[in-house]
Picture (cartoon, rainbow, N blue to C red):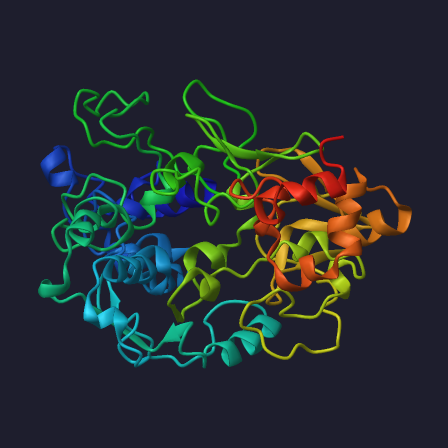
Length: 448
């Protein structure tokens, strides 16, 4: 905000409103103030006119993009914007021929909007190791395409029409919502500005009509960790309220891989150490905003695996190769991935001794997860410091919580070799008998 106010002061607005919204700060009437934009900002690629919602993807390159270069362009190609995975699932459920085709050129060819990837298969964001890895992965037609087509009207099922009217009013740059009149949280604002359905404005600005629904809840931007502690309305985890507007299915293993607890205000995974893991504690900026390529499913876009922090019983996370745990990785290199000396978007205290930053399965450093001695430590957006159990050290020290834990992870290699961690660590299969039946329950002594 200090930077925004300083830039605003240079353009006639000491509060900095014009930096994001545009407008004419010298005007005395609202109708005049909500017109145009300071020429000094426009000439530098800033706002070109007044925007009610600067986060709308149609204009985000002039607003958010002034500081967050390339984010809006990457976001338009990401799953959160194209919704290609959801569209394909709907076409399948409705038995449309376009999905049944075995021709890869017609499978997953539709997005919420037509878009092309014109800058090649190398990602626009990420570390050198990440870009090299993803350039090879991008050749897989099951994971990426160079372009998507808008859904033809004859393919629009009832479910897709519902998405267009509801989900996509946040995620995508819908033509029906004009740039100047949009009052819901579309584009960047769908995550980074707090809204609550039909709640209206709850802040202290007397110029905003609190009786009018559809207004932002607070005139505030919320990031990965938007502060410590709580105010009278929202905690620093409030960004999750926007995530769970869509990702709320507690029964879904995909959305609930580690036993997430849903609450009305905020959601978290309560681990054995008493820490609270938020979505943004694990999921990276590329997981959320994309990398500039056009992914066709979550396997293509999400870059993290459980082993990135927990490792295996044989190897610590930094001893694993790039690509370990990836469904489509192919032949893995023998070289360990190692650690990063530095990381972007760091979220750790300045005085913490750091041996290195852990890397994702695809080679990007986590900004909040470090190695310190033989410990892996996660610095949560909640402000808590959470030690991460590392399987190799647990096995070496024989500090398993139970004989069952040792059996499933160390004595039956097929578990970790052939299954994802969420096969067991999820609500759909909370006990071994979910797969093996009651006979195995007695054999392993679970009842004891």
